[in-house]
Image 1 (cartoon, one colour):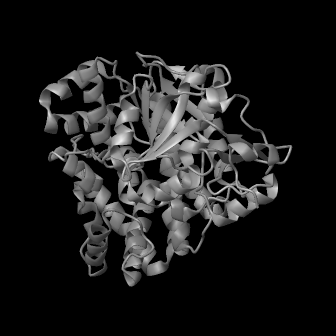
Image 2: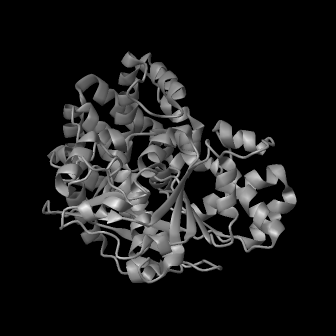
Image 3: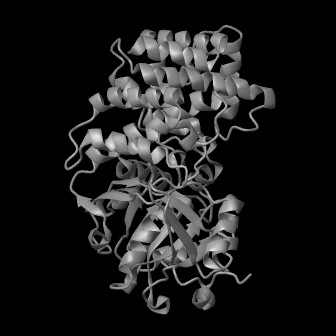
Length: 489
């Protein structure tokens, strides 16, 4: 079968939308680090929508990890093109080829090429989707404590940087030396105050190499915050086959996503930005109300539902969201989490929560619970713990505590396979704590300070966690959840 590329766009099925601009006219104005499925369903699409009227905002994608090689191997032969298929709540599908990624570089292959691209004065935005754990900022202390070897090496004086923030710091130094204006650093990850967190990480990396340069960055570089939203499962072989049948060409790196799409963005781009408002982006002065709403209702609900559902033998998110027990647990979490939110301009929270359950329950999206629990030790402290902290005055969020207890049992069960099905940078520490709990040490998981901070020492939190964990272990998750929901009514 013919492979997707610039030359084969004419071979696509007639119903597939293609770029409505001449890609040869597009210049790189954005460098994006972390070209995963979410970036391709979100920011890259918003950029694609504006290129017909302004060709200076093409994207150069960058991979900084060896694990990003499959993205390179898929996108480079396809001229950066890929198919985005969206599915609405009724299951109707719509496909388009996105053309905004006009170059892709893999830093392990050629870090100098990445630095040269980022140092180009035409680049005015460097954006990131490097996962919640990619910033190295401790949730409990707010301090930069990197755990990855690449960042540590860059801070220790590596001759050529290889980490995301090492590359950003070095390219800003080159721009400063040449007199070029600094670019804006834009985080698109699910992290509260993501602009501030990105700033903390970058300044710490720059400070380790050159305190004067760190001061220059602090005074001259903008770090707008953003709230991003679109449920986007990872690419699968099944998805590739479906796209080939639908479009008539082979796409090695297609994306499937729900039709819902939202981006709320702080409008702070001193050297310019695309006219994203014309593409549906909401530009605001204060992102935080939207950010808290999404993190504490959508992202946290993913964590709350996943561990009880996995223990119950479920596999798919939509399957879990048709399960009355799981739905009742998530709805209870949302009711209590909403009490920690500020008013959200223009948003009806009742409608938002109802729509979330409907979005989670879309069978057409085919998202897995397993995807939602990757790096749980990064996600729980960012999405769940802040709600528990605000309620840790003797009345912690009960639904969240039950979910954490299920998480503890799920980790304990993973010991049988040495955690082979758990993807988490803290896996050895998690398994060790779960092992201690299995031998009777009360709430050992809550002693992991990097995840729970001071919350883990709260006696009410510890008591609730251990009560629910004991019930799940002794009675099974179904009976324990039924009893919990009955007592919570």
